[in-house]
Image (tube, rainbow, N blue to C red; front, side):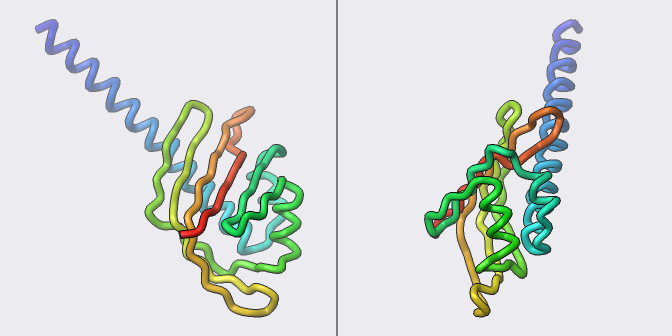
Length: 142
């Protein structure tokens, strides 16, 4: 009987941990949507609120930006996104960090010309002072 109780407690603990993990992953997935929406809407306030002061934002073409340059690029172009659709998304929790990997298809306007994009992406979100912030992002060519 004692062995059954131990097994029950172990399975309950595993179940609780899995549910907590899923809640964190769902929260991160919402943040990915929020930052993509802010990029599409050229919303500098939301971008500032979702990104770390120490942001390192890498583009698939090789450009690396800090937080200030990233937000300025979204606001001033030359590329403006009309849609950003991540798929095959995987979220891995690592302590106070979350690693997001996905493939992105996007529609944009670059210097007045329509542009269809497809690239890979990795994001690192960090929980600091109770808030998740994008710390690093790197796009890569497929």
